[in-house]
Image 1: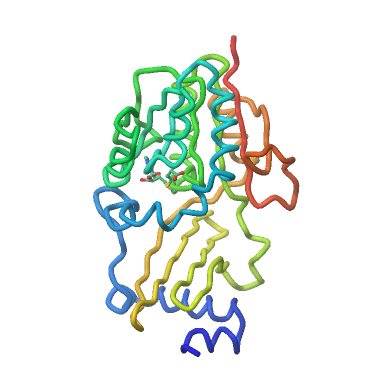
Image 2: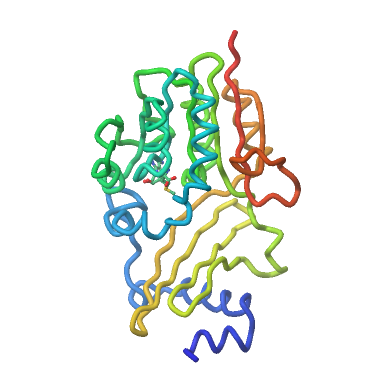
Amino acid sequence: MRGWVRVLADHGLQVVVQLLVDRFAASECEEQYGREVIDADGYFGENIAATYDESTADMSRPDVVGPAVDLLAELAGSGPALELGIGTGRIALPLAGRGVPVHGIDTSRAMVDRLRAKPGGDAIDVTIGDFASTRVEKSFSVAYPVFNTIMNLTSQDAQVHCFRNVAAHLAPGGCFVVEVMVPELRKLPAGQNAVPFHISESRWAFDTYDVATQAMNSNYVTITDGRAEHWSIPFRYIWSAELDLMARLAGLRLRDRWQDWTREPFTSESGKHVSVWKKPVG
Ligand SMILES: C[S@@+](CC[C@H](N)C(=O)[O-])C[C@H]1O[C@@H](n2cnc3c(N)ncnc32)[C@H](O)[C@@H]1O
């Protein structure tokens, strides 16, 4: 049994993850575990983009993508859609395949290059920029960030700006759709700040939470030939009630909230939600 796996078996997940958290908090972190992956493209630079589709393959299964595209196509009707953080086109490409004109915004040229390389990718307009502030001179029936992308905005101000920016892009009656996780604070034992979500011999993944600031980090440790490499991405976690308030500030009103794209009811046990806010017609 390998070292870390033996410790895991002996002491349990939480203890091991706390050891990792403490380890990465140490100043020698970069030297021991490699550089943080940040470049001009943000946190989704070339090295992330190169393996993004492979590492998120589960999220590209037809049973996952299909219901999302169904809902977005229904909300788009005969109008266009705006994807915030379009990435490699996991949702945009099948949505465009349904006849919905899709425009994307993304900071990462590396991710967008992957989209462009796929069949149909060159038919999708993309603006490189920050979706909290970038303007596209067009109005849309539906706008959406999926897969927790709203949490990539790491301040409350940026998230508030994002809602305002979306509202300015929506046609009257248009909808803003957000797919985002419910923060997993119920999984935090007293005195700890880490929630593991993947443990295997070669890969460790865990979120860390700062409940004072709503800052959250997802951490990935990959072990190859006995050497560990660490990648960390910052988020700002957000509750549904705060999202509703941001929507109100932007002049939008909650229309629906489900626990997933298949429109199952959102309950206190739901791990994520798909929320829809509408821009009033008048
Ligand atoms: C988790 S990926 C999601 C990609 C794609 N929507 C999907 O579902 O697979 C997040 C994407 O949002 C982009 N992104 C993150 N923060 C952004 C920001 N502030 N402005 C524009 N794009 C951003 C990243 O570059 C990345 O492509």
